[in-house]
Length: 357
Image (cartoon, rainbow, N blue to C red):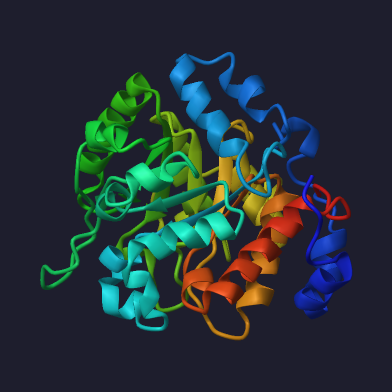
């Protein structure tokens, strides 16, 4: 196991006043004994008995056994698709070196990540040099930002076969659950994931919720535990090998918006208002942890990024999640500082003092 760069005390200091609550909380909702938790045998125990073919098992093993978290069952992935999703200028303006996609790959390597997830163009341009050195995750669909007014849609930017040709270990895709276009996206991505598995690549789904009605005057429910949990459950149904989801910051979306199906136990027994329990509900919807939950790192806020990254990692780990997929906090700062932030996230998962709640 890699040597810790950030000590328990340093992590506690970053958590500040929330340290006690986050590091000592014991969940009384879904018991950890009922979860499939990350560990060195994660691939063998879950996918070794599945229908995934040998080549897909090799691809999953490559991802789980690369970087500083190799062999732990945890993942630290660098995702950079914001140049398409948010415009290149807004994404790379704070650090223009990342207009050059080779620097994205270098950041993932130097930062000790398990894999790098970015666009067809960026990975294809550097495939021969770097595909053997770090697992590639090709993001195969994106929002098309130039249509005015902008819409909540994801369209394919290339084929699964082309991802395979450039040496990818996995493909990633987004579905905007709740959007008008979600039915088409579900069909497209399900077909793409089936083909990816046939070719021996792993699959990662960005399970995001999108609907203007999900945001009311009182609260934004796009990241409510019940809505995001159900998005996760739909994602594992189309055979995602990993689920990427935003960290929940509330609950009760179905009840407040008065749609969907609910049961009182969803809110009274299976969840509480504690952030770790909210995240555990997301984990439970990923087949009780058999499919790993990796939470997203979120936007860069400047000086608070290190504290925010530590908090998100602690919540995900203690909830039973499988890691973090954090981009803007790392690449929107000098590379040396970005590497340090990625190492901080990894140190939370390497730290034996931080246990499952």
